[in-house]
Length: 235
Image (cartoon, rainbow, N blue to C red; front, side, top):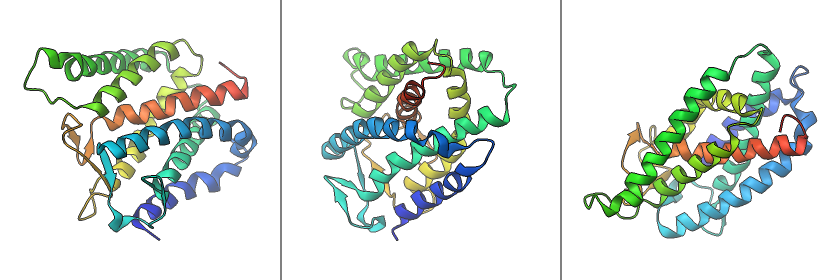
């Protein structure tokens, strides 16, 4: 199996095995989760394909199985199935095991932080380029990820599940840093997934581009929205 494949498999084993825990009973909501994953996954795979063709990022064949869908390796396609599955699992675990959780304060702080930071990134690395000639010209990844994060935050803020989403997102930062760190070269000689410095602002969290925080948020927020829509609860 490829290195990227091992990362995906190891990420998936735990949540899948615990999906039959009686308190969470995650398997009972698969019928709501599957269409949510497919809808969001198709959109992000198209985004992924376009940016791969543009050279914003790419994949090291040294760490891949060798099967592709367009320009995307099989492992990357599976990434957009496994990560959403794991996230909703963690969200429901938090709801099941922490019934007295308080999210109001963290929701306000997070919303302001995400909203202001994403807006500033769009202004400085998008429209701000009109005024600061030293900035890079082609920050497609930065601008698109931050703009989408800002818009999603505005529309999702009053949703009843948004506080739980933020809590789950913050809990998932630990596996996010582990998995994305491995993919971007923290433990390998070369990055499994590489990013063009021309298209990002250049800030790195270890080996992970700073924009990945927004990209991950952009992936998981619509997923959660659709999941609750199909489930018909707390929309």
